[in-house]
Length: 170
Image 1 (cartoon, one colour):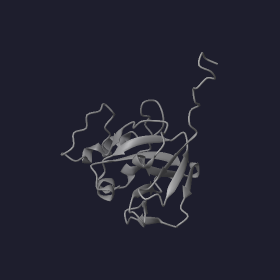
Image 2 (cartoon, helix red, strand yellow):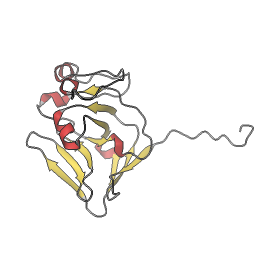
Image 3 (cartoon, helix red, strand yellow):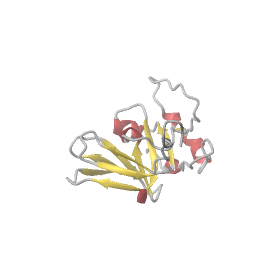
Image 4 (cartoon, one colour):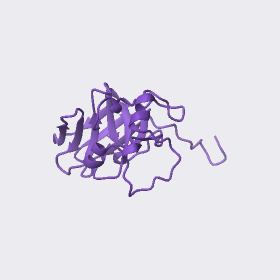
């Protein structure tokens, strides 16, 4: 107890919720996440219409999807990988690939509750757009560097597998 009553500190969250823009698809992700990174690859940029996408990686079985209206759609890319999006509002939401078996990547901006870590790196930075200035001090991994640093640890926490570099075009 403290002077104002029972200790008001809350325990660290064990999960985090999120949803698409319209709310038709929700999810609950059990923490901890595996990693969080900004992806600058051309496929993520084009799929999201943005200069880069911040992904949070989770074990597939750590994520519960809430999709009562069967709104979740998957685009299967010829180059490999699948991108999940809401068929109702169009929100790009998920990425999964055989390069990361057992992982589901969730667009970080979809979380409406805090998650356990901030972004740890920029990946595919060698393909970044020249019209956005990145002003942080996070590691910037290129395709070649990511390939040589397969399984490298960022900031001493989770492993970001760089299997993306095994295949062109993610």
